[in-house]
Image (cartoon, rainbow, N blue to C red; front, side, top):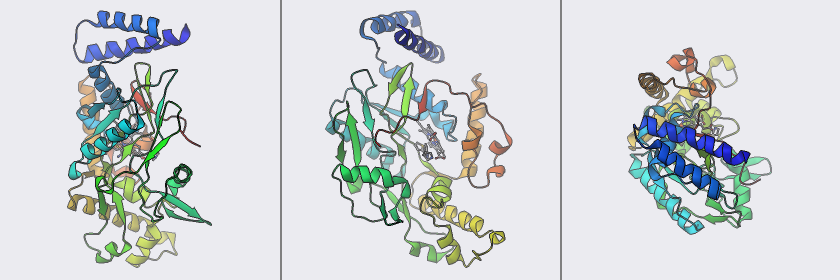
Length: 360
Ligand code: HEM
Ligand SMILES: N/C(=N/c1cccc(CO[C@@H]2CCNC2)c1)c1cccs1
């Protein structure tokens, strides 16, 4: 019926892409196998090499990602055989250790079993490592973006210390059963205390951020199969921390504090105090991560790398798709070639997609 035909059509498109790009023979035999599996069981199973190729090409197709030059270096861990929350927890611990690698961050994805009519695995975390947010009569301690998830974790029985930098627990929901939460051992969390190369007072703000961003709430679609739990990490671009996470009014809202400490006139927009504070905050992020040997990329270097990705795609007979509104960095966008370029925002498959929140 319609759904299965739809599944076979998507499977065929992916398999033909895989055999073409990897210059493999025997595609018709593989397609017969898949068609039989779908007819008999309503689904099919990717080989490990198909899975790895799918995850890499999904990154290559991620229109909002400026970091795609390195799409082919992704390390793929196949965790489809894991069946218990404890086993999945251990795989997530291993992912954090492998990806962190003492600061020499390795781009990694761990892929749990795809959803079927009977089961679905979901990670409730937006990122495996993230700070809690506690709302007390109008003021927030920690990350305002985490207030909702923090409340859910408390309802599940988790208790944080109430600081601005509490690491949230892993929350794993398997097969529509009661979600289970697990603390991440502190020694697995690499963090960077923020200091400025020229302003000695900067360290007195007592700011820090975590080393490795690991997105855990997106759906990886490959050949019609949905991997609803497939956490992936790269390294940060400094503006994500210095121009958004620590700067947005609805996040840590630190521009006034930095500007005051710089002695800027924060009463007049035209003093450009926000812009001067932004540059120094981003400079502190870059300086701190680089000094501690934790991978990070500045937005100019990242744009250059993206330009090389575009050129490399053209050499392979492809044209890089992109979402211009996300690809331009939030600091000095017009100082990059991206601002002066245009991109088709076509969603090719395999790809990473948003999914309905696992909790509300
Ligand atoms: C290796 C270093 C990487 C860097 C520096 C990088 C950089 C970025 C940045 C700055 C964004 C925009 C995020 C935002 O504005 O909130 C982004 C988006 C994205 N990246 Fe990358 N990325 C990297 C690796 C990866 C990897 C390994 C994957 C997946 C395998 C990936 C998939 C994506 C996706 C799906 C988005 C869009 C997320 C959304 O729509 O919310 N990136 N990337
Ligand atoms: N540097 C990164 N940045 C991000 C990549 C994807 C998503 C995000 C966070 O997106 C949130 C949702 C919309 N803005 C914030 C950040 C990476 C995380 C995982 C691999 S690379």
